[in-house]
Length: 271
Image (cartoon, rainbow, N blue to C red; front, side):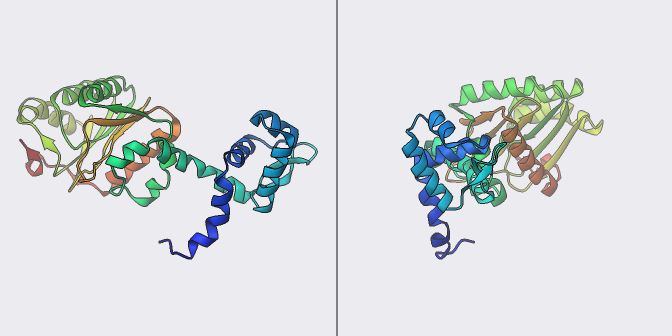
């Protein structure tokens, strides 16, 4: 838990990160050490500007010398490396600022919120029809595995999961007592899924409440965030293919999987 005194501890670092030029220098040095002339050329700034800003980073303990073959290049210090790794966090929340105005991450454990930088390059899909089309594509193209946590079941998805499981795709699903199941799904889709579960082709677990939807395949991942009322927004989807995002989604799914118990549709919400 942060205290007011912590503000003075980090204010110097935030002061340095407030400069676009200094942020760019840190990002550049995160790739490899470089000399002053190389930094100025890459950032398209004058040598004087490069020197002034690097000096500030050196004084703040974020950059030091000792890099390169001759040891004369500038490089990130350990403090600089740690600070630079968190730039992605702020990129993600700024890039998706409009999304976070209507949605919340408070139902996600803090350790995953701290890794929210993994969402920085995700594509945002809006409105229900495009969302479900993208989900169908994600699930239908799975070759090795599917990991899904849902707040609302829909008939076509159940059929896709059954078809994928029959083609040796490892399917694991998490439902909640608040997950909505239309009668059509219960009557026509669940029976074959139950059969696949008994044969071990599909694994299913249950939580008391599902507050975020997660969809993971071997090629891409997606999440639906809850709105301010805590209800999963079925008309919004964050989709990404980068390994860091896929890992974030998989770790989050596994977190809930470990805490889930046996699934019983008798406890689900049927409408």
